[in-house]
Length: 208
Image 1 (cartoon, rainbow, N blue to C red):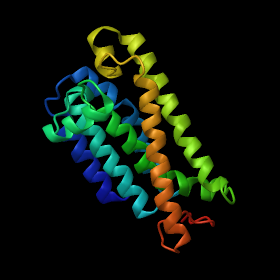
Image 2: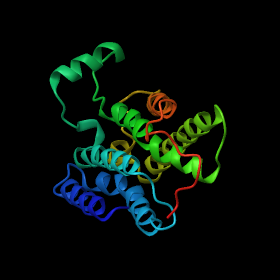
Image 3: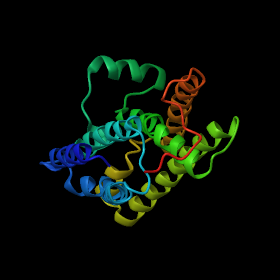
Image 4: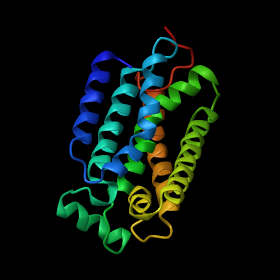
């Protein structure tokens, strides 16, 4: 991870951890972050991603830290956006978690596409299908982690981390949003690749 992004990442985490709505939920939300950051830092020399990938991952982290600060079901956002989302979704709920699952699929795709291009190098249509499937599987694994944490901790903390807001299909909808986000990003990156823009995944390894 580039040094300036590492510093910015730590600054965002410090902000997020300053008087969060629920300290226990904040710690749970950042457990995977605490694992991911060292992997990116110590793996930087072995596998470097493009600037686009790092910026996209940083953008997702910022959005995630907002959710961790307020808890996902209590993040404030504009009333007009709430009304717009309540219409097609039905009912009245905080949709920040839905938006973040879409953002996850969308913003991690540049890095996932680069990872596959360098480590697995699928050809033809598979270079796009495999990365989308990878994001889908990660989304499913995360829902299992959420479920396990809710069972382990239970009570208000478990419910805050799970964030279903009474929706029995919450996990399925979250996975759908991540899938749609990854498909949207793939379509954009595939178009860029066909037009010869640098946003598409490289076929050759660019390890440095």
